[in-house]
Length: 286
Image (cartoon, rainbow, N blue to C red; front, side, top):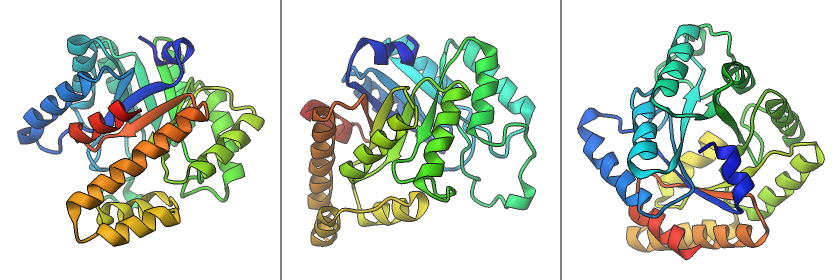
């Protein structure tokens, strides 16, 4: 099923993100995680293009195909264009088409570790909007993009970022999935501004449960997200007790999702970190 049709059929759309294994030896564990997540019957599951920014993954299309064919659940394959030659993008699009994967999340992506900016491969698709136009030209895919409730790290301000979102829509994006955030009011403010700017396509709220202090610190510097006082307090309170911190993080994610659903968001997208038990807890609670 095309993702745009899911948003037309129901509200909220409930979905998960998983990432491919970094090593072939870990493939069995991700297959097991997908089986547990698929048992929850989400509306769709997205598969990232790499594990933790480690670069393109040859497993993305394979896992997306398995989700569709084995479990009958719509899948989205992430596709990034940074440091990729045109021939590579063309080959991935053909592979997805051959495997029957028709939904793509088009992203610029981040440079893989160890790759300097001056050595980046020149590609005609320099950003997500370029990639969206390339995907739209195929005519057989439903493409979406990312959005950033507090602005992308490279944007000058949120208003500029929302202008880029409108351009993504004009370039063919048919839905958006937000970067993780922890402040619901900031997300709702962003959503209101996006609608006022003419961004009409569905927007799912991206929620990541908190599992550790190091995870939070990494997200702050990688994504520029802000932390409500409530989060700072429970991370500080439980940082010496991993189990209680995990529990508090899950409770916060559940409260986030419930609040947003009550506010009428188009969808809730859970960043599972390949942890099916946490995904199940959140999903059953909402």
